[in-house]
Image (cartoon, rainbow, N blue to C red; front, side):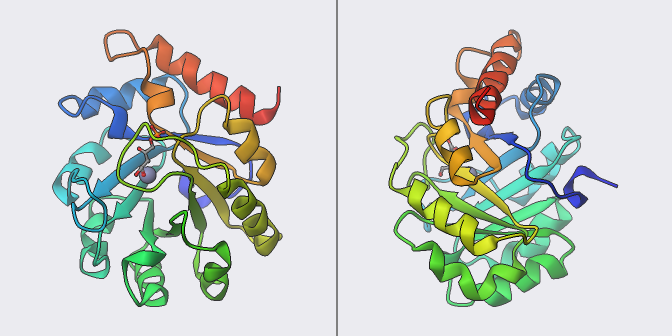
Length: 232
Ligand code: DX5
Ligand code: ZN
């Protein structure tokens, strides 16, 4: 059984490779996995849905062979549906699409599961979590954006904590992960964990101070975020 097929609410740290060295993704991924991350978060941006541009299916496929944990692909693109099969074929375990990216999120979530992937639903800070109610049972994960998507290193939006709490109540005992993405560090990790999040994406707070030549800071950063989230 692959990690992506088991469910629990333990804290999972998902470094965003948006903060990695773009010329060295293979070794960066090997480094963060060796240093103890749980998932690898891959931010796909199209310069249209968000004002930044990253990479597409060929690169996602190329990095897949370096990932032994879970490949968590966050699609900040519109439209989404024409590209789902390509990201599934690239080896995504989770594909997350934005509610705001199109008029047919129900169809999109069905298509992600139909392609053999776990389905994630991302919500921008301006979207109330209650907008996910009708499609919650099509989701394996809901991602509450704690920044406006597009860039790493932004300031955490504290008002999203109440949204996480409301989503946690909505989910109840259903096996649906709550992911938070943006501005997660040792200060904000305890807040999101207390509110009910279990998958913590962190870009700058994981990669800060380290490199493939000196990866120990990655491990220290991952452990510090996890410890903070667990309230230890
Ligand atoms: C933002 C991305 C995030 C981002 C997180 O659009 O979806 O995954 O890289 O970066 P930090 O942790 O630096 O806010
Ligand atoms: Zn992301």
